[in-house]
Length: 81
Image (tube, rainbow, N blue to C red; front, side, top):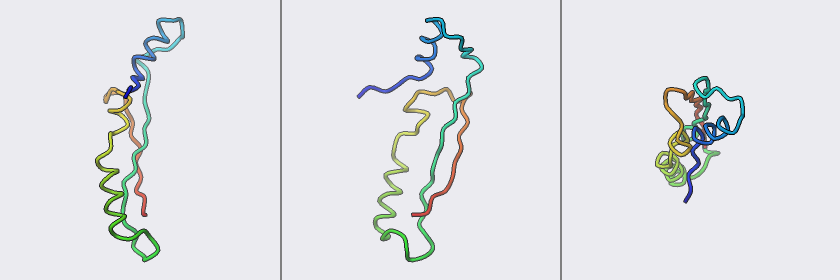
């Protein structure tokens, strides 16, 4: 499977004449944390645990897109399912 490399793509764009200052780029990614709902209207407990486990074990967006950590801003929120 091919993984995108966003910084390399921006360097290519800069080399092809695009006026991007790569040293001034900031990357923004979102992150969600799955929590069980307090009421009985949510998913069954086993499904909540399974979904949370899959979400925790998935590849982080910054790793997938090969974003440098010194230029990264992560915005997180908690989601009740």
